[in-house]
Image 1 (tube, rainbow, N blue to C red):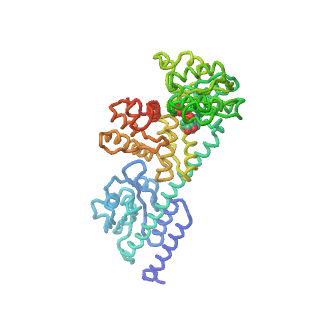
Image 2 (image 1 turned 90 degrees about the vertical axis):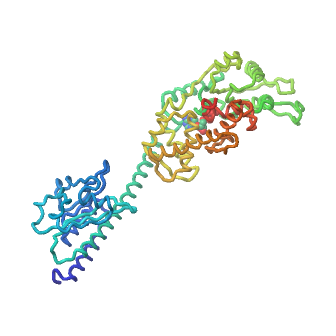
Image 3 (image 1 turned 30 degrees about the vertical axis):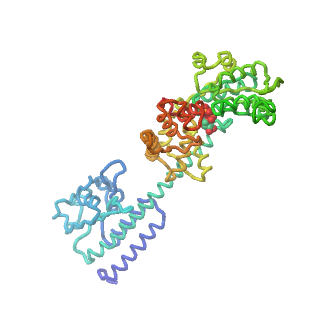
Length: 521
Ligand SMILES: Nc1ncnc2c1ncn2[C@@H]1O[C@H](COP(=O)(O)OP(=O)(O)OP(=O)(O)O)[C@@H](O)[C@H]1O
């Protein structure tokens, strides 16, 4: 077949396209594959010094990312500001430019390859846009001797095909990189989970403050004395109370949890101390109270600061005498229980203002154990995040991960609601995430989205304004609702509680739990 005949060029074109396809199919590194395509353009069709120019990762300019027939110095010189030269213009405008004669085109820069390096003939320059997802991300360009047997339009057709192939490769490459990043993050999380010592009693964290509290628990587990757990809401007081029970010889006996803030006053006494048949209307049969039910085991009185005054007296007697008298009864029943109490209040201050019995306070405060707020141990946050992510993913059949940067962002937050707030946030994140790996920016956007409704809810909490429930919480009243009720009641907690069908103590408790108390009072 004679060089120059159209049949000859069709054969060359077919060969080039087959080779390009096979380069794509080989799964080579991006640079190898693109260089291979530029080499084919040069050797098969004589379209020389091909280059692919892409946006620099660390700036606004565009640089030669892949080339064939350029020295490394020439490739390094190929940097173009937006709209600069022919290449910059093709990328900015998104359409092909053909310079028929580079010597006659004033805006041709000859920046990468000096004119003296090119043949003395008339040289053309062709640059085409490279698009990914309908966006121009770079350009494919090459030199062409103007007068040759092959038509310009045939060269342009092939260049268009190759530019499309490069676009496809770039798209694929970006997807593979994204997927690899997701897998790397996931591996990191798994490695961390493996490194984290098996959590004792389900307590995650290795900060000195946390380990100190855990060591104290284990040291006093064998003793019978009461333990008082001190710490803000959500710091893990219940978890530690359970740990104490599990570490004690009572571990096979019951662990009874009583939330002193959540029980209506009218029921409190009979729930705690039990009642005899006929003790009050509705007491159709005798019932053992929680102290009796906990016999042999541990009773955990959460929010002990909320215990009404008359029951404080009764509790003190119970502790001193190890007996209870059921409501409506006379019999003293011996009980053998370990008491763990918890509070997020300053009980000393409650004593000082006469709201808590001093003698009971001393009786409870034999072994005080302080649980640090989460903000005081940010080093525990990565392990906690890994733990809550794994749990939320498993519960919801998802596979959402956070980048290290996103975890660092979480570690910098103040966490007024402590670990409970962190656990809730991660669960919402897993449920609402639109993609598999969330980075710092995704997380920041999520956090500001989450904060918005609360602000709106507060603003809209005017009489007649719509109520926006910002959080999905296990509590029946979201923080916005509590806040709104308080606002409508002119700051009067008793009235606000009544509106929501809560006792004043329950209302105050939920308000504190929501982390909004400071802002609300
Ligand atoms: N160190 C920890 N590791 C793992 N999970 C934790 C840890 N601390 C707390 N949690 C979890 O955080 C949530 C809140 O903890 P917990 O209920 O024990 O706090 P609390 O101090 O008793 O709160 P409150 O005073 O509001 O009752 C629970 O789901 C608990 O399992």
